[in-house]
Length: 140
Length: 140
Image 1 (spheres, rainbow over the protein chains, first blue to last red):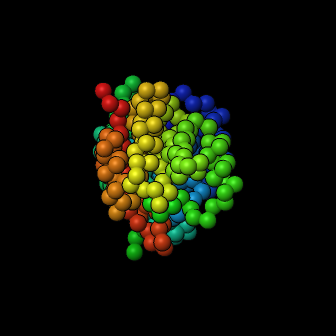
Image 2 (cartoon, chains in turn brown, orange; image 1 turned 90 degrees about the vertical axis):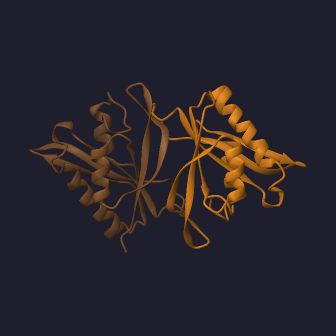
Image 3 (cartoon, rainbow over the protein chains, first blue to last red; image 1 turned 180 degrees about the vertical axis):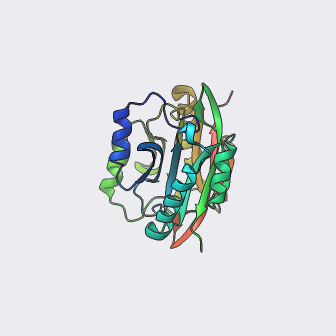
C-alpha cells in the first residue's frame, strides 16, 4: 500500500469483497502470478452525472516484491484497451505521489499527462504529502 | 447551472432533498433573499478514507440574476469559517471552468490557489470543456 492512497491493515474479507463485487459501474482487473493475486487495477466512476461520465478514475497496485517486472504494464495494457475500445472513455484520471517516479514514468508511457499538483493530498507515514494528478485523453 | 458541473432540468423535489438531507458527512448552506433561496454552497467528503478526510470538496451556485452582489462572498465566508474554525480541514478543493474569471477571482480572495487544469473535464452546451482545480490550505 506504500505508493497508494489506500489504508493499511485492511481485512482479507474487505479486499475479497472489493475485488469480487466492485462498486457499480467500475471495472476491476487482477494480475495473477503462480496462482496468487499480485496486483490489481481498476476504473471507477465519478458519481452518476451524465456531464462527467465520459471520464473515469484509475487506480493500481502491485505487490512490492514484483514491482518493475511488467505487472503494472500488463494491467495498464488491459485497462487502457477496455477504456479505448469498449467503454469509449474520453478521459482517464489518476493520482500519484510526487516522489513516485517509477509509477509516473509508467503512466507517461501509456499516454497520461501531468495536469497539476495537489498539495497535502493524502496522509502517508504521518505526514500530508503532495500528489500529481495525471490524465489520459482518448487517442484520436 | 451555467457555471457548475450540475445537470439542468432537475426536479424541485431532487433539490429539496439534496439541500434538506445532505449526504452524510457533508455540510450545506443556502443563501436567502426576500424569502427565496438564491444560492447554495457546501463541503463534500472524498469518500471515507482516514487518509483523505483532512480535505473536502467545495461547490457553490448563485442565482444568475443575483451574481456579483455579494451572495457568493457571504457563502464563502460561512463555508471557510466552518472549515477553519470547526472542522479543522487542512485542505478544501474546488473545480471551476477555465473561462469563469469572476468565480476564480472570488475564490482567490478566499485563499484558493490554482493547482492544475483538467482537460475536457465536463460536458457544457455539447462540448467537453477544461476546468481549473483550485485548493485552499488551512491558514496558519
